[in-house]
Length: 355
Image 1 (cartoon, rainbow, N blue to C red):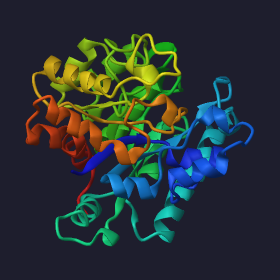
Image 2 (cartoon, rainbow, N blue to C red; image 1 turned 90 degrees about the vertical axis):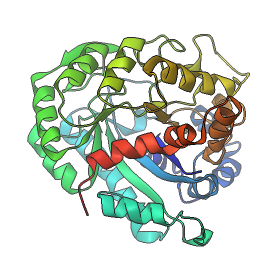
Image 3 (cartoon, helix red, strand yellow; image 1 turned 180 degrees about the vertical axis):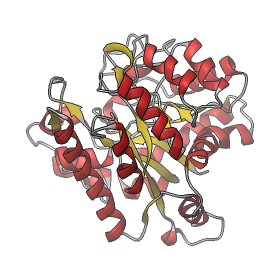
Image 4 (cartoon, rainbow, N blue to C red; image 1 turned 180 degrees about the horizontal axis):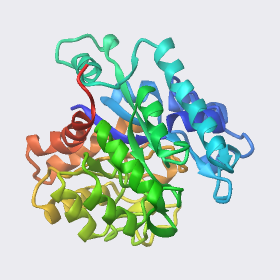
């Protein structure tokens, strides 16, 4: 079973903590054991070997930047004070992804449908495992590196196909913990993104901005890594009305496998059962009336480690356990395929140009 993971902070982890995604997460853990300061990042859970082993064929890989005004954790050493600084930080991450693809024949940057089809073909039955490839699709998380809306064209030319306008509030809209609508610049950015057919990521957008974007944006929309507020009642996630509105736009929300985002009451150290992830997915399916509007956006290594993921998810190699759990719940094979990969591939194909 192929998996599309709609959110991993691969380049950020390299720049912030020296975690080389080409290496095994288990090797990184052994290397970091006992290092001062590494505990805040948690146990590494992502890596190329684990992705290949687990069938994670496509990953939406982020260009993540955080404002210096938000001193929230391990990303502080990569924060920015203004748009040019944000631009420079995102470029460093883009350079890392380009280097990964240049230096490893099992890593491909996917910017058009031809490249996506070529990656997926390496996973066809009968093809050698040694020839399998992982496709990385560039997702800008927080649009402040786009210095002005017209500059999106430059980022698109470099391969960015997905943009989430906010993390906290940005120049483009309100964000997590900082409510607000789209700004005039945000509305202009959405108009320009729509001209390119880019995929708009609603995750982290403030509710007012999110609802406005769903009404306004003419291109494809999804939420790469957002859970229902029924499970985690904060403005970081989507309420039932927002999920229904997203489904009406044929959008998809990616389930996050972070215990804190799966329960209003989790505080650790005991891990939640994997069943909670299945409940999240089932809730979206029941709410929207089909299995067509939910996928996986793990956010693994996105500020938390394996010890803060549900039981049974030690690395990305274990994401397939979600599909097995859905089968035990009685989900049909076609619906499981849609949830594990098909829905996110539908969103991606809608945003990619021919190639």
